[in-house]
Amino acid sequence: MSTCKTILSKSQLQKRVSELGAQISQDYSGKSLVLIGVLNGAFIFMADLARAIALERVQVDFIRVSSYGKESESSGEITLSKDVELDLEGKDVLLVEDIIDTGRTLAWLHHSFQQRKAASVRICTLIDKPERREVDIQPDYTGFAVAQGFLVGYGLDYAEDFRHFPEISHLELS
Ligand code: IMP
Ligand code: MG
Image (cartoon, rainbow, N blue to C red):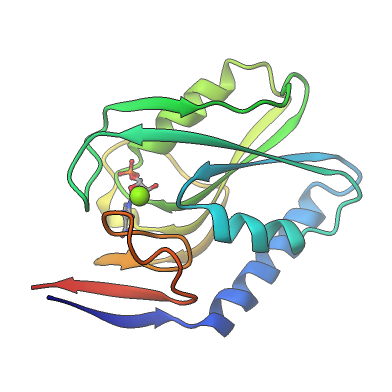
């Protein structure tokens, strides 16, 4: 049995994503930007964030990484299962993640992107769980900091379920 308690409503998500889009538009003013979504979790956030960015030139691409572990925890052993297809050389890149937990996935991705001769690589995450961090990585843009709990919805899954929920809920497994 599992129960879900909503912690971020549709309107809270919409408002914060608009604010992030406005901040990113200001910071990259006059530049073009490549948004790279980390599949599968970032697919909904990425779709909303892209539409909140008011720059003339924005390209989007996706990457997919797998980490072997339990349903609710990543093991830190990361492999690339789908790479980006755009050429990133000289580009300003923004990695778009659903959630940073231990930080292992993003630390790995950040390192891998630094070697691709991009002009800059920054990180935008919808949710940050800073208390859970095991490696030193800081997002440049954060939607919400959440202290604890396992979250589902708005792209976030538990064993691949619940990604389609329009709000973010705290999943209680019993
Ligand atoms: P990290 O490598 O420990 O930072 O894990 C990041 C990945 O673990 C995220 O991209 C998610 O796929 C997954 N994850 C971590 N915490 C949660 C959560 O609360 N809900 C759903 N997925 C999570
Ligand atoms: Mg996941």
